[in-house]
Image 1 (cartoon, rainbow, N blue to C red):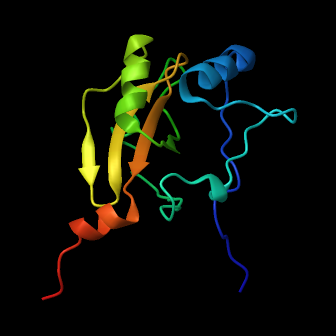
Image 2 (image 1 turned 180 degrees about the vertical axis):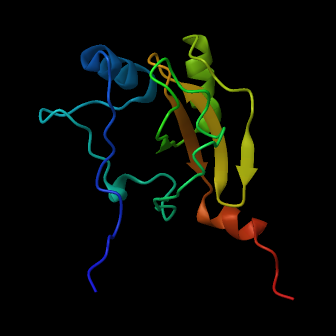
Length: 141
């Protein structure tokens, strides 16, 4: 049977695409190519061997996506992999980017949330390196 093998792209609506693209380039390092999008290659994964993409559904009344915007509740949230969560959050704080004070640590990485200028909640995820993830695994009984 044919099946989906991964996420091929993420597409966002924007009131002002040019300005929002510039914000993402400046604050998150997502620079658009000539075709108008950014391409993330699995060979670029940091740390190495942490590559994965999650697809998940949430209840329609989930607070996980934030409060939404004047357009109504946010219908989707992008999770961006980052190479150094603490350093990025320090950079974003210096630029007065809205940062949710809540943090989560899991056995597969660390999480934080920010909001872009159009009110979209964004999840930032720093995957754990394979060796660090192995330290956190429970030993077999």
